[in-house]
Image (cartoon, rainbow, N blue to C red; front, side):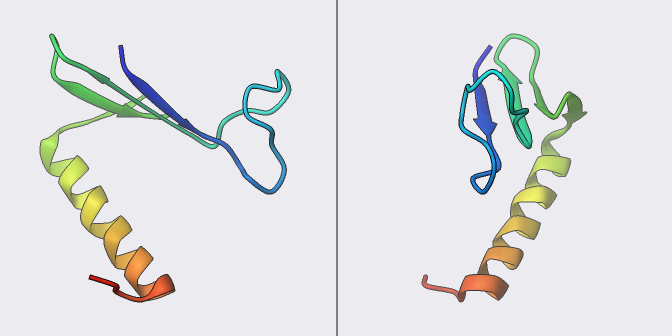
Length: 65
């Protein structure tokens, strides 16, 4: 199962054995599901999350595209 883990860059060292990741995204090929911190999202939920993250990024850093 593929997985991407995100750590708090201000306080954590990745895989230090002490810190917990702030975000973990997993996905499955045979049983189409994407989970964020263990919560399953369907395609429309993931699309909404992507749109929201893009809006937040552009509002914070400006739109470069």
